[in-house]
Length: 310
Image 1 (cartoon, rainbow, N blue to C red):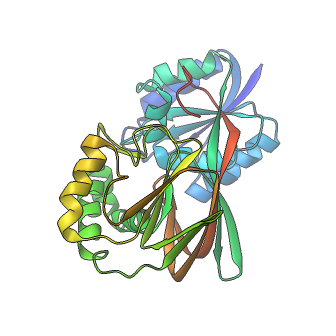
Image 2 (image 1 turned 135 degrees about the vertical axis):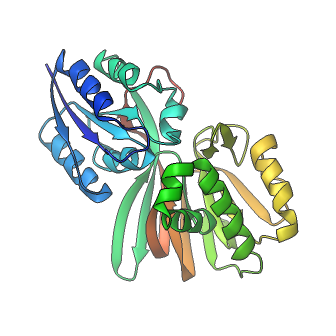
């Protein structure tokens, strides 16, 4: 019999006690299941890692992209399977995987014990002073603009909870208009013989970079192999409408003036002076002096209905 833990975030926007009871009942039919209620993201990562070390077969994250990100930190690199019950606002990773949006349907998919899919993740090593940390990104990561948007959006949790993607979109516009035009390049990216210095660096390693509601944002239209990197050299206010059109409609930012896109990258290192903020999967990771991002193929097993993520 499988051993399953369900790590839930009860403040996720679509979480209900009834849905949690239904999910637990579904798993209880075929597995030994127990609920866990961490009080924070780091605690969720700790209890997930503890469950894996204890021999749990399936670690389920019930919530939005935040709890999925933190639970995955404890599952990456193990033989345990990550299951997702998407009850957040945007549920980006669940949508990329093609998971059912209803909690009971998602739970039944996981409980069927179909062979899991192995997917790659982006491994991030971050350095601030003498402190080094390690993180794994499931669908997005970057330094600079996108990280500042995450930090700013998190300052108003009510609007984040109530308005979701609209809150992120308005925050992105305010940050891009108010802080980045005129900012001098201070993040240097290096990959082999290539180097570039800009104000922001954003990775795409799924077929989408992220979603705003049902709108998908991409750096390049094809799923990059293994990753694509956008280095934003400079940002002019007058170009923001064109950038928004290219991101939301064309899905291709390679021809934007002031942007440089590297395709087919496996590992990139960064130096930031002054320090730059970093983010992964919409979670703020703090300020960094240096960083490296590398592609880790087949590092995570997920319960998924079909093969849609590398």
